[in-house]
Length: 90
Image (cartoon, rainbow, N blue to C red; front, side, top):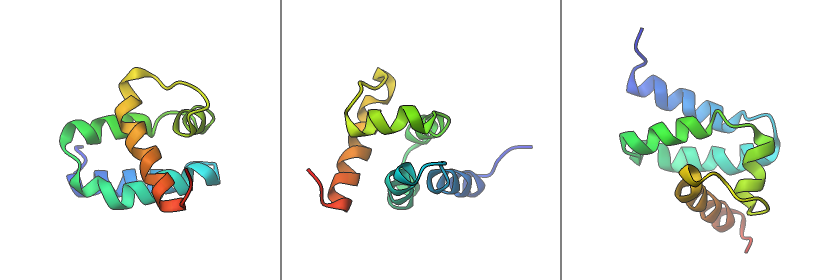
């Protein structure tokens, strides 16, 4: 059975908000709410792959305390900038 585009966005949004750690919920959830609907197919595919990563890896990548895999660099840079703006941090 094929996932409809609407079901995919709903699943990805829920997965962004229910990560397992509150920090990643607060970073990925608002980003997904605001950006998923405007992403193209390639961006959605990459974000979907990112959602499969462990929070223990994601948080250091987003916060810049550990280098992230090159395939995620642009996406995580945008997510990090979004989170910093949203939460008022530098």
